[in-house]
Length: 366
Ligand SMILES: Cc1ncc(COP(=O)(O)O)c(C=O)c1O
Image (cartoon, rainbow, N blue to C red):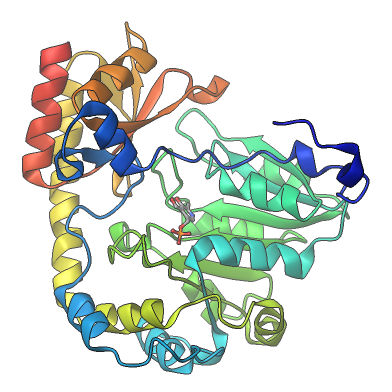
């Protein structure tokens, strides 16, 4: 990071340069330009986006919407109403956000005072660290077990009077496994606000919302339209909160952070559930074929997945080398090199033709 000049340094928070920035991938167009290929020929399997894109109803609704010059409803009543029906809860339990990233931040702003602690079970989604540190929290990870399972006793041992929030992604990114609801129930007995991040819910189907309906007070469930509904670029997420926490969440949320376009797209997606669910089914079928194909390469060992991506260990060669060779052939995958995920790649599930291209390329570079 560049040296901060003395004229401004004393005006910044003392710890602001220590925050772990969320890694920003290279823009698709630039990557394509550097290889001299059309961006449409890049096989983008690095960010768990939906290979089928959004619903055609979204494109129609966005094209015909007449009110882009008007601010959105800050309470997003129309969308929250539709989401209430989709999730099966009162719309007064729902907050929408500019992606679930905004809601991760919102929950932290609701709970954390500088010096408080935020925990999760790692390896997990990297933005929890950035967002926790951004509000002045100490962020700590409890290690997951050999199959990336959570040990509730280890979590309990970490919780002290200053621990406010526990993030549990289920299914977890990047490991792909969901957390059984019995474990979530145990965690809810602990004195901490439990945020179950269900960004990949539609690929697995098991939800903690039932526990909220049963009256859990210290539970928030987060979801997103980025993955199953193909709206990653429009930024739309939502949270399901206990009713008494909702007014606080709404009072802290920037009023217009969710655009008219995102709201229109969210409602049009909910109008086209059969279409979107059929794409989810196709992704699930492809998940098995991709897992078998990866295992068949002889140098990739896939972990089981409950989501729309597969984490694999690279054996007998370097993951960085495999990633670089794929990139030379216009295929993007995500690489990890933390101690627990040393030499691992995470590969998003694409369409059948994309799986064919990936597997053929892996055979070629084997
Ligand atoms: C576990 C998890 N939570 C949240 C997000 C962020 O989703 P959004 O696009 O809604 O901000 C992601 C994105 O990859 C994720 O993997």
